[in-house]
Length: 266
Image 1 (cartoon, rainbow, N blue to C red):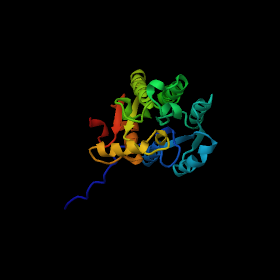
Image 2 (cartoon, rainbow, N blue to C red):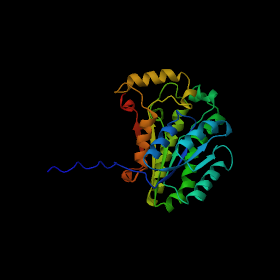
Image 3 (tube, rainbow, N blue to C red):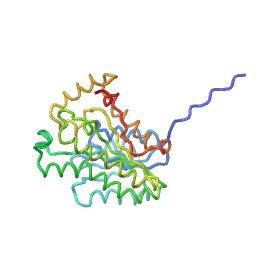
Image 4 (cartoon, rainbow, N blue to C red):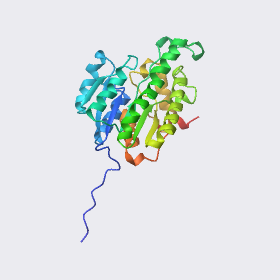
């Protein structure tokens, strides 16, 4: 008699893990796709929102994901980032993974040539888009030690490596973010803390819509990618969820592409 087929076992699970997601702005955010993937694999989530205006868009997503923690977090406001981690510590005592999905540059600097950007605009873009990830890593470190290790993830773009028209100031900023990710991985690896920069192809998000002629960039990406399509926030989320899992424990310091092959075409 033939035996019954084995029940497929999920390739990876985040059951029992707790993660902090920073950067949900609305339904179309990369962070939203990631948060849903984390939750689908069993993780419990803490979610932040930028300000009171943003809360009405983020709160329904937090409710959908049954997030027990929903706190404001504007990294420009003194104490808010620290308060978010204090809320995590009070609720859970430890943290298994973190997603940093925030970026900003003043419009006048973003739409101009890199050589023309103001010092103030450059510093603000670096502070919000890059240095905030270092701050989060520092705050997460003791909480992840208590969890026996963890995973820190941020979001980057191919414009960090090659000149992409209209990406402008964010290119150097994302290059710094990727370098910071490698240093985080090297410095915290001994504690079992991993770090990755996830690099999606162009996506129509609120942050990306601030780029000049972004619709042209999207169409160019569609034509350039071997699959001749754009990726989705769900596909980005699937990769992020895997990287947060124990099955990815041997990987750290990577630039993890999920771009339909966009980055391999010269």
